[in-house]
Length: 595
Image 1 (cartoon, rainbow, N blue to C red):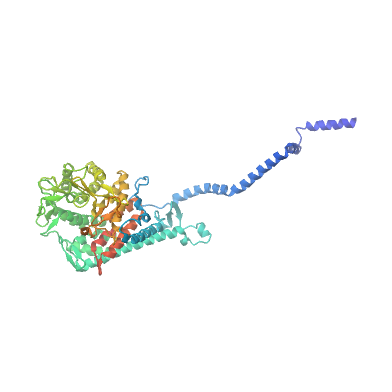
Image 2: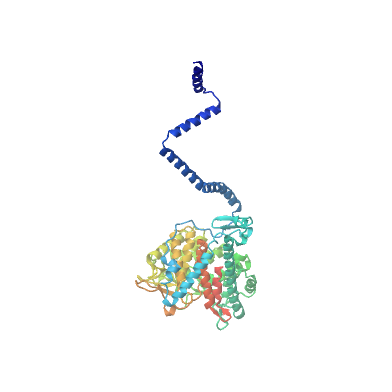
């Protein structure tokens, strides 16, 4: 009994040892869990084991991605700090406009879609080849949008800043840094642009050589006969090319031309000159060269010619005569009419306003401002569109009812916007006239061709629409883009892109790749091609409007296709406008903008 009693005591006292050692308590919990596990049915135990195994397998599978994510979080902070140090300095040239939604482009912007539709059948193989080549060039330059700072060992590629002086993963693994894909693409693009610049310089030198040998100091070279022609006898080609030579860094050629200006150029001549042509070529050329060089020789010459042109404004209406004798100081209208063209009298303002600003003599700006004031209040406009002629005696529009953005009216619209920008965007009258005119274009002159839907600007004659478009109208894409860049409605940029495509098509749908002077667009359903050219219009006058607009679109949109299109046009000019060992001078001068 005594032993049995002790056994019962021992059994009871074990349960009461709540303050026993840690090991005994832990052992009890293990036994308790095991008893509970044994109490489960075989099915329950199998289900629990299956879930545990499944969780284990999922954990192993997700481990690499989790660790990579955690590394990315820590690495992102380091990249941010690195970006703040390595980010390249971007010079302020022409900043991009505010981001807009993707503009609605016509279907024709795809070269491959158009290859089997545009142009006469005989051109389709050639156009297919051209389209593919253009696309290839664009693809080769895909990583070239941000490369400033490259010379310092820092490049920007697809949004990532890379220090080329430090090893990357590729170089650590044995890959040559110079062979990295990003570096190869940037280097290829830089080499391509460098070769293009050299080609433009060479085109200029080639043309300049012919001018220097056969027409030095005269207005124009006649490349076929290797002689020259005179318009005013003032060295128009030489003066017009001064700023181009400076921009192209052709210092030797520039110094030769500058010497001629200093020693040979005189405006004290008994010669009639056209007010408009003398202003944009001579006065404008001298002022732009002064701005580039700071040499007062060119400002002095600009003031001289500007003063000699002022008698043209001595008319009853203050609308200037078209011609002035710069030696006698006498102005007059053309012999056959007392009218001046609206484009000519409203496209001299930029130059005369700038002459007043530089010389601090207000008479130049006052004269051209009066012209704009008169035109602003005239009757005879159609939704801001102006007729082509204006009478110098009574100051009224003549030949009313005809509205065009081509010859005799084109640059009126261009100079409205540029005067507004030139004046610090404060002259609301100019802005109102410009915006009203653009709305008038949309309402009355804008149409689409068939079959490919090219957007074009036609003409209106006494209520009848004509699908005729001058090459001169191709100033409009660049002007619209410039306005949108300066805060005007975003849809101006959309329209600029559509019209730029049309102007490009006016080139590539021709057998030579050069645009005719005038085209007519087909609007009838069932047409097989968008563009027709009449026999009298099948010539190219080396006009600059399309190339200038390409320059604006490329600078303001950063889209390299516009630069590619310009390069294509330059090549065609080089191929078809050279005559023997000379080339048409103005083709090389104009296309120097491509650089």
